[in-house]
Length: 211
Ligand code: AMP
Image (cartoon, rainbow, N blue to C red):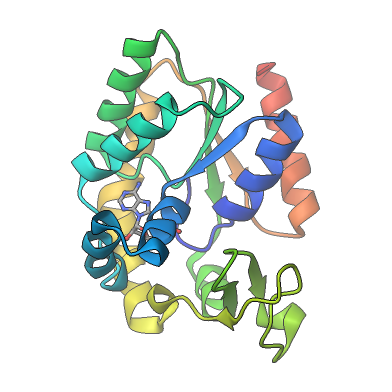
């Protein structure tokens, strides 16, 4: 968990790779649906472009389906989910029904000023979702990995970012209190510094839990 721009995608991907598990990113799943032009994608677009959250039942349904799909692993890193208390309750139900539980919740902490700087310089590949930053790629227009076009996400524009940060404060931050009051360990990890440094902190915190 963490506000927009905290590095959930980058750190989630590394974590899933290190642990040898699948990463389930609701943001990536929604963007994929948009690219594929499915009904879900069309419905999600208007919420995403406005910086609002896609309705809880849609998201929980999507995660339920993903948990049932054969993924070659029964462990997951959730990225950007749950984002509301209702989704956290929905996830609890999905897990109980499967006799599973959450090992830990990780909150990536980054201050507002840095979030805005990160998001305004973020560029993503239109084809493969790879994320880069203008501070590293300069004015390059093509993805290093696949050659796809590098673009700014429509929801990374300043007016939408302001709304996303507000939505995070109003709806997502309370989810941290939900977990604080639960049996699931909640760890806050400093999300500033180099990518590898943050990953080290994250792994150290997880190892303390012996996950
Ligand atoms: P992200 O890539 O995680 O920043 O997500 C981009 C956008 O997708 C968000 O601003 C929401 O509009 C939507 N989204 C992603 N995950 C969720 C979620 N768990 N619940 C509701 N909307 C979501």
